[in-house]
Length: 283
Ligand SMILES: Nc1ncnc2c1ncn2[C@@H]1O[C@H](COP(=O)(O)OP(=O)(O)O)[C@@H](O)[C@H]1O
Ligand SMILES: [Mg+2]
Picture 1 (cartoon, protein in one colour):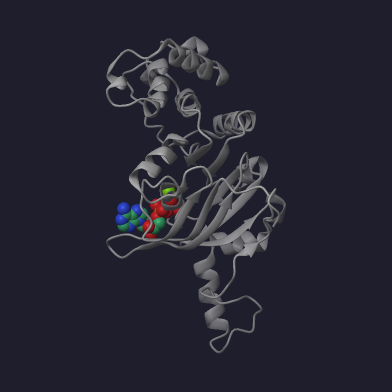
Picture 2 (tube, protein in one colour):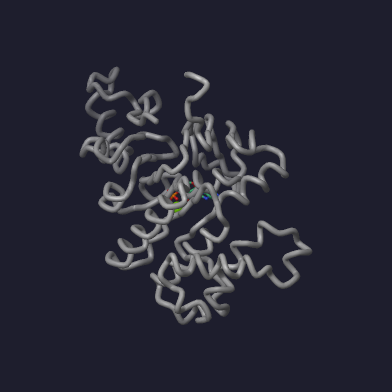
């Protein structure tokens, strides 16, 4: 590697997460994320997608491994975690907006992390209001700035969520099933918008989805999770039927393989614990 090699913006080094009840949600995830990359995380319900995204901004502290930001450093101490969170926006399936407040007010909350607690009690600077309007304009909702969020459609609410994330001026955006509650046509529009704004601002996006078709259409890179393990990491073009079988039906595939090959496995597929991830990603 030369000194001019591009550094990953965020690096996960053997990240493990075991919840207090003993559930192992992440089993040694080692991943690198580069600036401007649009990554989609696919996996069955319970595969660990939410756990991965929550670990990536330390909303959930990993129980093993390390997360390193190229800007902030090793994410361990509180001050560094705070600095990392300021640079990392979140978008949620149920948008988590303040329903009784205007779209503009909601977008302005994206600015709060940039101000101290005392400052946030004072009127917001004009520059923040101008930025919030600009963000609403970018998601096509300038005319809804003063409309209460609970009077907006589901798609419009999620676009407010995107505008709020943009107002944070993040370098990383984590979106957990952002279009799962939307009808297919609206999901398409919101995801296309999300991809466009991330590209415009060179934001590193990591988005969990359950629609393979959307993933292959919008992602630069797809990460497949199964039972807390990264089982695929590559471009959409490498997402073959066989790979999808591994991502979506690993348990069944493993059970079938164990039945067919009770002795040492001769199928050519590694057993689940020793199967290496299909690493096809090169950045
Ligand atoms: N707070 C929690 N406490 C205990 N187990 C949890 C908790 N959150 C998630 N899990 C478990 O961790 C695993 C991964 O869950 P999750 O990350 O939510 O997966 P996904 O988002 O892919 O559906 C699942 O087995 C789930 O039941
Ligand atoms: Mg989830």
